[in-house]
Amino acid sequence: MRLFAYSGCCLAALISVSSLTVATAGECAFQQSFADSLAQSQPASFASKHFFVPVQLTDPNLDPPSMDDLESFPEADELPDGDAYGGSQSGSEDEASRAHGGALDKLFVELGQATDVDEARVLSARIQQLMLLSGSHTVDLLMHRASQAMRLEQYGLALDLLDAVVRLRPAYAEGWNRRATVHYLREDFGQSLSDIEQVLRLEPRHFPALTGLGMILRRMEQDKKALEVYEHVLSINPMLESAQEAVRELKLEMEADEI
Image 1: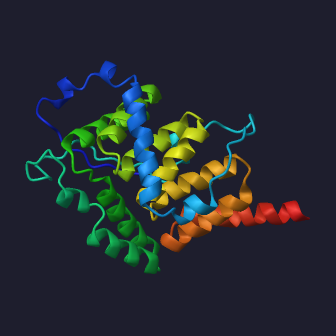
Image 2: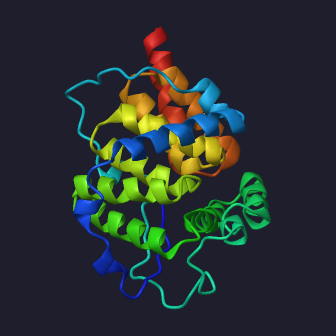
Image 3: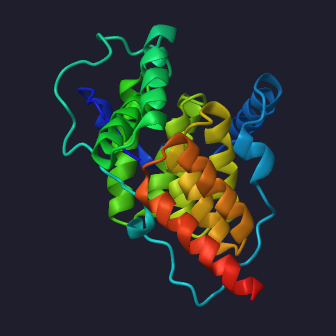
């Protein structure tokens, strides 16, 4: 789960936390309208059809979720120089397609055919970099600030910022994915699953979101469904070591339960 971010000259001064904290009735209606239209306009992904389950309480003795649970959470060390979007703030269709066009499709094909761990890691990193391009300087800065808040465990602030991201760019899968991560870290698994479902409707191959889904299902003791998720992850990213390990562990646990 990576991000690229680009600075806007006076943007930081214009983003007020107080303006992001409370969703109005109109904003909630917008989000519901978006979710409804998305469900009608796009077929349910493989994960959406097979893996989502009612939320149940987890074992209170489990360690709380942490950033260490995540496969990777690399970020740019600083806001890169230059103008990746050619000076445009409008987020044109051409800009949006940079993250979801032919280059991304080609990388996913190469990733699915990779047989070397190091090669797969490079391809995985390039895919995540492309998926993080939002087409908006504003969204990129919000994502960067949300990432900083997450690292400081300021999850409330991170959610405020990411709420703004999904309002500004509802078709930006990584915004939903990052918000799902914050909900996971807060142990709000219901909200995390809801956001993961949105991610997978927008980008069914989003293996970091699928991995997050598998992690939640394991915490909910839905081992069979978790195994299916991780096997699906490996159909997309066959050299992902964390998914390989999860499959081995789940199979051993399920075999032990049957004895």
